[in-house]
Image 1 (cartoon, one colour):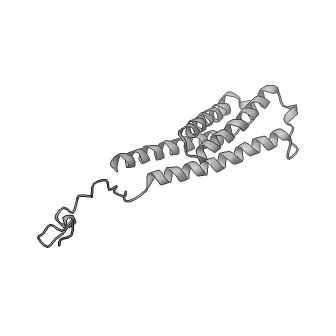
Image 2: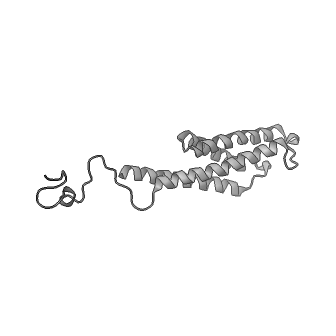
Image 3: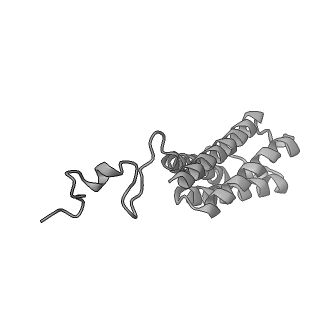
Length: 152
């Protein structure tokens, strides 16, 4: 009796065709696992934006001696909007969903524009650079992960 993988000539099918994988087999990528890197980046960004959102809410409810009620209504609106959007983006990024990434990119755009369009808020320019750098890193990881998926 012969084995199913035996060719009858003393070798197996895998020996006869070393480059071929069995039908339905998925080859494991070698090197950097970009999809895993993307997930880790999204989770780290989610934790960071969750903390930002909670800090916004702490400012709103008056922790730390904040003077939120004394601010102009336009500033209060910006802070409250970002408090909500930061938390929504953080949850979506933690779930690694496409809507979470979209909300997060919108939040990054808004936070970058606030630095330049509303300078009286006193948001440091470094925040804009962090936002742009984060968006570029995310897009890089998405691009590499998509290339990894196409190659598999």
